[in-house]
Image (tube, rainbow, N blue to C red; front, side, top):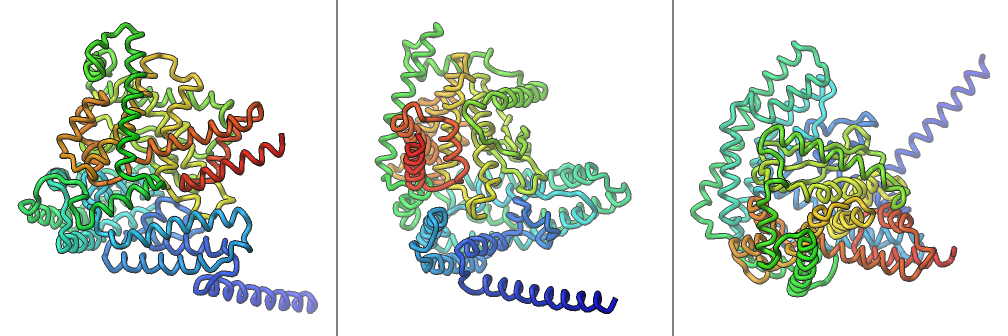
Length: 609
């Protein structure tokens, strides 16, 4: 027994030494330059993630470890918090550059290069940090907060529900921080377009005039507690506490934002692109570089768009003529006739909208079962289809994708906006499902999240030209694989590609050529055939997200170019599954680095053939 106790003492001492050594290592890694660049990657990603409790709740990487301190916190939107983030970016860049490329593995060099692109862009963007509109019809705090609470904040027990209520109690601070930033923008001569003021006022007034018990913040919590099977008495207590916070904290916070926008309404003059902001032309060129990861000038992108518009419209007219439709009046007349054909629409009823969701699910189930010839990697995360929340569907885009939680507790989601039934013609549904779901965003984003051999930051970064380029490429891929046999479905695919080509024209038109809002809407309506509600929402989106709309077509063009390069150089050794595996399992990256990655894949495949 004495010998056994001695062994235990030795083990305890060794364990204590190991714990102290581990603690010392953690302190060193956290405060000083890590000896290994992968420790630096992990530290940097964690430091930035810790700045955002809302991001931590979204990705759910700490919850499986029992760490939930962030679950009752909201992001700090203050100017001081932004100062801290930019200081951290500059510090991280300095440390990153100190790692010698010659001592890094090829994989680590690639990760270093990807992170450096991100940090360089952020350093350059700091001078334009106020050139955005943090309260807008697309993604402002006024609709982002309720969406976060409904879609992201999970309630599995009483503690989670109490965290929900605590987050409600902190809305006033968050909104006041946003107001601080809005007032700083005013001092700098940065005000939103007129339509932004009009629409956010309408949205916020409608939100606060909704009785608390009918509002999304209250009903979402009640639904979550019922699904979690929380005791009825506890549910009543928690619901009453939530009602009190919404009445006493949330609605007054919205009231302060409403008052501010009413105050600036008379000061806003018209709807102008970012050219009207201080150094706006330079800001737009930087935005294009960020969103396309190219050095294309605004004029070059404009001209690419014009050329693609002409090509795609010609292909659509050829199909319509083959189906016996009159195309003698040109593209706009032919698409107007197609758009007005009632056979392509569901009933404008709740039942019709439920049918749309059922058919979207059937489309995705069909393609999911038929992709073996093109993919030998699939995401583990499930995909759900649901409707856009009613409180924001009037100004939201036609559809979007929401990433799954990394701990598997929440699936990916294809969210469809069914506000205007005419915005969902049957011939366009397959393409939308392929873009947002399979094999588009869900394949790309969920697979990226699941690549455990990549540094954590590379499992999250979005590089829009890559991710949106992939989703648009996925639309064409589905057609190539035979999933759009109906010629009208192919019209829908081409119309979607045309829509992205038109985006190149109108985005640069608004922010570079100084088009008016009405001029841009008119061009989009004449050249796409989409519903007017969609055209208005899209054009207004480009005003508040300058450059982002250009990422889709630029990225698709590059991915198709790389695929054809690999096919031409590898000949019979080319395997589409290999190409897709290389593109998807290395995560998002700038198009220049993707080009180099594919060249490496070609060289390796040649060596094995």
